[in-house]
Length: 78
Image (cartoon, rainbow, N blue to C red; front, side, top):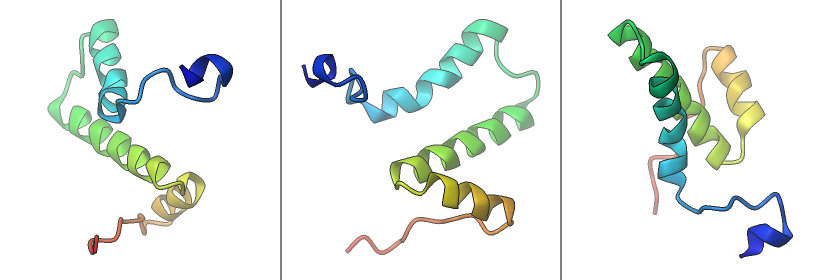
């Protein structure tokens, strides 16, 4: 119950559920996207933002995407 003492700690630890929550809210409010291409584009952008945020390089990642050189995670996990 660390989130009670520290408001910066999220009350859940399920990152995957947190990532899809905003898309579900979008579906509930407006009924989803009118076009499949728009839905795909939005999901790609949200996935990129989620990845750079989890890697702690949010501003650097946004800047590199604007410069048309998006940050990619290291493929070698060893």
